[in-house]
Image 1 (cartoon, chains in turn green, yellow):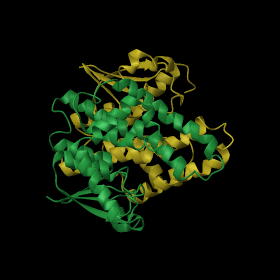
Image 2: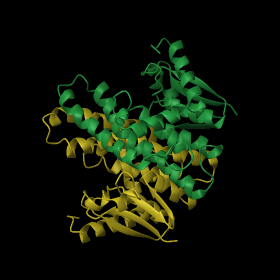
Image 3: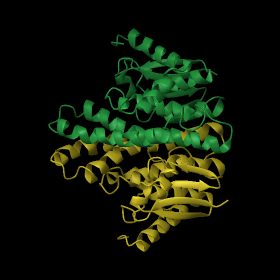
Image 4: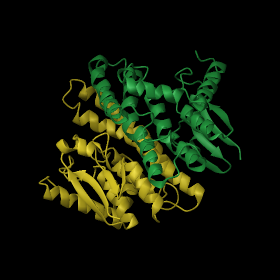
Length: 217
Length: 217
């Protein structure tokens, strides 16, 4: 059955791989599932046809026959639960890998997203400069805890899993601020994710799309 | 096997049911699983014994024999995937219910959490008053989309699921601001959640704990 995902027609990051379609492409590449990408403009994302797929008017969506999913976490979980390689077979190890998937999205990503919001949506506000250190320190608080937990392990809990895929994807969004580099073990962890052939294919495909759409690349 | 969860020794909300243990208690009550609650002080949450269970030093955690989980989303999913009543059997309906679980946590909760942060951690800052309308409008943007999607349905996708349990839990956190009441169908949706016997048991238990700990109740 053909799998189709949606991605930005012109990614706001110009092809840095930080948009949420990259994590879904990565999971599909890890699982070895061929897929098509439909690009959606910012205007089309808010129109009824796209809202019927994604009630919050975002990307990515995932279509597989009659099944329509949205939310990168749900899509990655769907892929991981149906194909080998992204979740351990042992029930306890599997539950822990899923825990890291949720932790990436609900504990680590929110302060990183707040930092993006502070820059993009509030960068021109009179409070922007004074407030920024607080917002950055909230990212640091989470990254310090994650760094302490990871220690010198390669991955968060045993073998590479969907939890690592999501955590690396989320951490990548903290790199432009320079904060990721303050934690050498997290920086190395992200680099291990980026070195995976499946990640490289995902990254390169979204970059090609960004260049084709006229983004800086 | 005994299930033990952790909760605040003194919940910051004084027993309003907004702390993240309530959603886990609710899921356990829906599934009919007996459980014990271990209360943790703010100081103990940051100590090695608790950090070994929860790397981010928060509550709730979930212990079942040797299995230790954290993240309310992961715990609710773990319960829902192993007991009847919280996820549909049909694979597509199940994937969609899981999508709503992730949407509650990664799309709807973050702006609501930002509003709490703006009040609690930045309420005394010079920018607080000028910034608040922006933060509130971000919550409204999400709630308006969710309200449009829900329409006059009882639940998000067919029968009540773990996705609804989490969405109701997340929306409850927007009620103190008054924003939830601006969307009558979401307000009614939350009320339907609160009317469930399992929710009532969960709410009452956490309230009893808050009163026993000397919180206002």
